[in-house]
Length: 219
Image 1 (tube, one colour):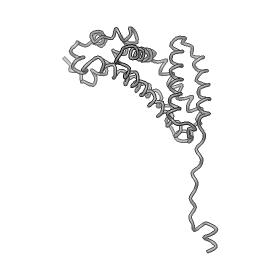
Image 2 (image 1 turned 90 degrees about the vertical axis):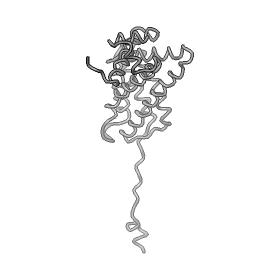
Image 3 (image 1 turned 120 degrees about the horizontal axis):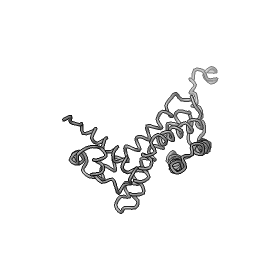
Image 4 (image 1 turned 30 degrees about the vertical axis):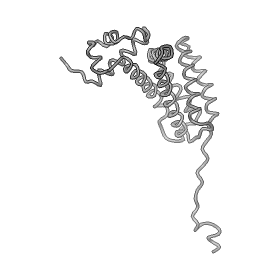
């Protein structure tokens, strides 16, 4: 019998949990249901996770990392190749493409948020989830500023909160309506609004050598 590496087991169980939560809800995501979904014996779960709660925390981390990977291609490139409005719009499109490609992931994340807020003692999990969202959004804002040679007129943390609020609404709205055109129009408006919160960085002053100053020539 082939021995599956621990890291691969963890990944398979996390992906199985994601599917179960998206399809049936957190309450249905028992350890037995998860291992059945993954096609593993129950002992495999306890070999790699101490508890179901640990698995849920890792599920959130894995989903957020997936969203971060969706954003990365839009914010790569050389400085000055793109303006802020277009950089934001491209980032939103990459995010939305990820939502469309894996709506189950997004449904699972929303289900996890509601579960964590509803069940006493699990609120920290929801706070951690949104802390990670804000970290990803803040990094995206910094990357956009670097890529476009711009600076934000508001603190990056504020920009990140706006981004997260918008993507929350975009995601939920699309999951309900599946209206791509409406989503595109919303992303256009959001890109315009967010770009207005940035300005080109002022040029770096050139330090002139004293040998070339008028005062130097007069001496």
